[in-house]
Image 1 (tube, rainbow, N blue to C red):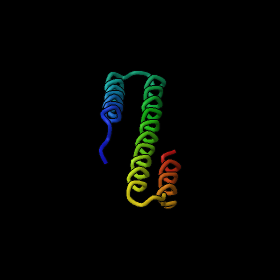
Image 2 (cartoon, helix red, strand yellow; image 1 turned 45 degrees about the vertical axis):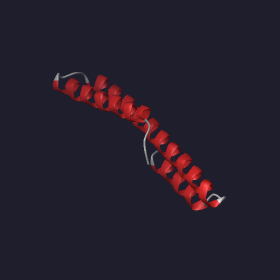
Image 3 (cartoon, rainbow, N blue to C red; image 1 turned 120 degrees about the vertical axis):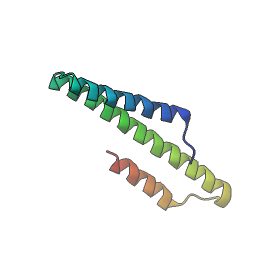
Image 4 (tube, helix red, strand yellow; image 1 turned 90 degrees about the horizontal axis):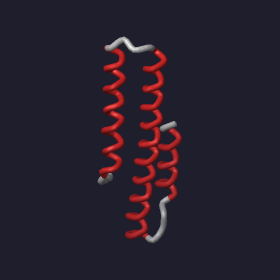
Length: 87
């Protein structure tokens, strides 16, 4: 599967947030500030994970409909399980 540049950019921003958290720890910032930034990073990861699963499901469904004229229920079930697992 090919991933959109926007999705990759989201992950790069998250990577920057994590580096920022490490820098804050090295600078001895307060626990509250670090936890706030980690929480924001986690939320960004959760949103990106949902986006990736949704895009993957959409592409799989399109591919299947092009070749088989029906949607495999197992494919949809697997996508839902991935979304649930990501929470």
